[in-house]
Image (cartoon, rainbow, N blue to C red; front, top):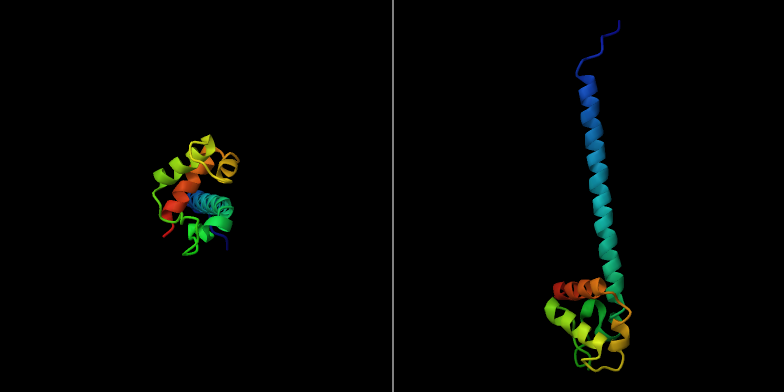
Length: 114
């Protein structure tokens, strides 16, 4: 004995399809955010040799701790190095290798490190 198809089945299929697509979109967004975090962390890792992992410089060393500094302050210092307004042995060369957006992202990243 066969039953007639329910008139609600197409609607259920549409709802199921929407749920699957929503899940895919959320998954893609999470992957995108993970990729952005990883990209930013890799940018910040270039600072680790001198300023310590995630900006936590070794106590007693000459180089400053970047972790927790206000983002505006850090960005202003990075831009001052780039223009030569602030003298340095190497930072003026390093900052020229980053875009404005990258410097802003780094400043924000280190501000969030505690």
